[in-house]
Length: 329
Image 1 (cartoon, rainbow, N blue to C red):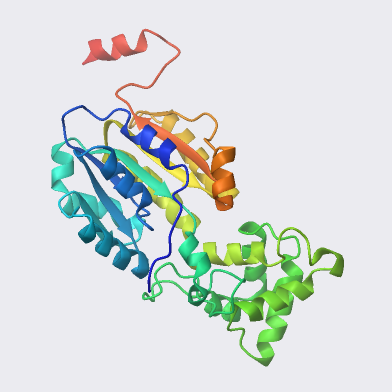
Image 2: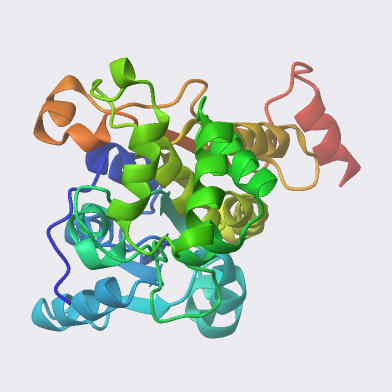
């Protein structure tokens, strides 16, 4: 399946943050852990011929498209694309990227969370209610590691569906929708996106069915997060990425959902307060897209970028702390 064109959100801002501390005249290594259409990865390669990239993706379409593009642009010597969920990258990096750590680690690591335009635009992936397709929603549709949306809808007990729709989708009609799903599936399995959309649509009061936001939006979002265990994976991975950075290296994360952003914000804050591995949070407030970018790509409107940097010493209110630590050494 051909990977449709993907707009790389906050591309300039990401590249500027990640490359600012790169040493002149030396090879620098970067990791793009959500390769997608390759926008961020290739922008790093175009920025400087001494920049090398290690990327990951678990989507078969992205991997096939990426391999073809890497070959076409003659970049095989500068980029490696690994077939994996980014939660496995810390181990892969240590085992398969010794050249990176010979240079002290990664100069920059990027996570661009959420779903690409390709996922929304391909009916067969089941991410969107705009098309009638199978209720799949797995980023890696060739893997049985995760349940499909269809399996979740047809097997989860009612209270668990309510919890998912409420916590992941902030859906006010969660209880009514979950009850209706459980009632309908007794007659026949709910198998397609349109089957589910129709159930959700009729759970809304008539006056709220044709608003600015489609009634199915929150439930579909919640299901996608549950299917791919996105919040769980993000929470478990962030702290494992920080030790992969070289001194002055940066971790940049783009989120599109308030729950994702809250996780990033809180874990960055905790990392900044830790004395184990000093880091500095560079974004007191998240960087958001410009009005021009939102006009060019409306899907970028909810994007938030947060960045931290690995440092030798944390900034401390006690100006003598650094000198004291140096004396102790």
